[in-house]
Amino acid sequence: MQELRFIGNNMSSIQQLNPRHYKILEFYLRGWTNKQIADNLNITQCNVSVVTRGQSFQHEVTMRREKLEELSNQSIVSSDQEVTDAIREGTKSAVDRILGCIHSDDENVAIRASTEILDRGGFPKVSKIESKSLSVVMNAEDLVKLKEAMLLDRD
Image (cartoon, rainbow, N blue to C red; front, side, top):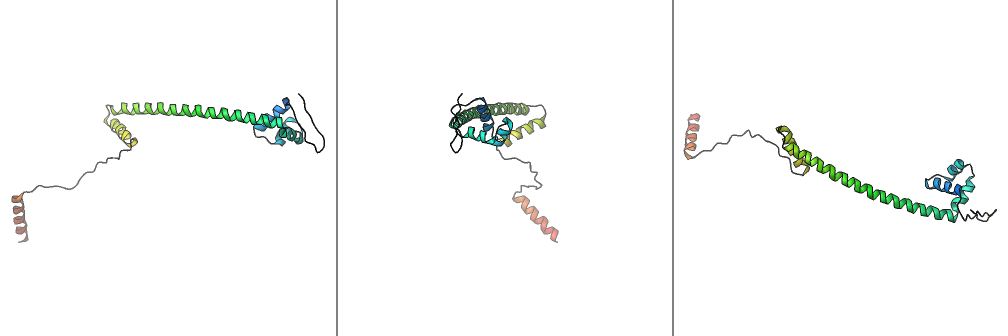
């Protein structure tokens, strides 16, 4: 584990990461600031900065981020599939249950289940309307009698 440092205006160059550098890397990937890392490890912010600017460190950060991204993409795909499967299973179970309710001995339960299926299927609601009008079928004889009755009422 070799570490090369140049004092003054020259850049420090870290050739190989040691356990402390890996600890800095862990905190760095968690999004900690240089000050937080320095306080936690009891080192100066300057030391943290030297480590984080090194090519070896940056290379390791890039590799780890790629691995993390790959793992998170895999977990998203697998969790997405699990969610899709759960929705399918839940939907099938719900439909089976509603269909069971349609064949219920209780008429109100059967009507509610049928209405629920029609509503979910996008069918328009059917409402019962009671007509208060009265329709009468009349033939020619009835009209003549009605006319005569109306004439009698006027007199």
